[in-house]
Image (tube, rainbow, N blue to C red; front, side, top):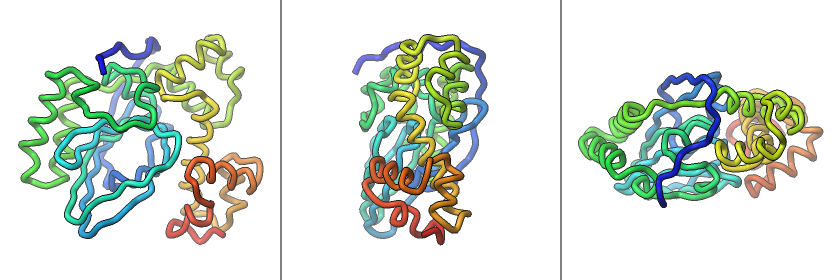
Amino acid sequence: MQDRSGPTDQGPTASSASADPTPLAAREATPTLAASASASASASASGSAAAELVLPDACMDIVWTGGRLVVAGPDTRAHSVEMRAGEVAAGLRLAPGTAPALLGVVAHELRDQRVPLDEVWSARASRGVAEAVERAAPRGPGAVAAAIEDTLLGLSPLRQGVSGQVMLTMSARGAEVTEIARETGWSERQLRRHSHELFGYGLATLRRVLRLQAAVRLAGTETSLAAVAGGAGYSDQAHLARDVRALTGTTPTALFAGRTAAG
């Protein structure tokens, strides 16, 4: 894949980085509504063979696993990640809408894909990250995660235009396309194009993904599926069940098992 320029949204930008101890495969807790561009490093090691369900979260990741660096594009459905006994993984989770400017590729080209970093980024930049990871590997997955974060953000600080932030926060509130278009000053056609460039899919899918993430967070505190549905912005419990099935292939009860007493 050739290097490409990122989206054309050129609003004011901000950057930050924060540590996140969550295992990379468990990408439920995302910096979805961060006011600024952000990234979080994570690492995990498996003592025995295991599989985890990775939920769509509007983020993109730079992952080191199996001795190689991979870009995990924005997902539209959950997928299972299998780790062999003794396998380690580490990476950098990039907040929604920030990866395209960093990597120089529009998000929809990586939707539902796992692509080697050197096929997306410049050879020089990819080599710099790979060399940093190689030096850090003997110190364990935590050191690898830190090396990926330090090297990537040192080469190219994260940026997210104000319009991208507006699209993200308004979508999380369930705003309609017409309302977001009015707020950003774009036509609905321009808005769809920018959404695909920044997030990998249209605003309707972005709303569903963010709503699912809200439900997962609420499942840790609410005691009923009806309360989760209402708090996350679903019209009712049946709406929650339909969306969860469409995005994850399972039921809310099964998805939230171990996270909540909701039922």
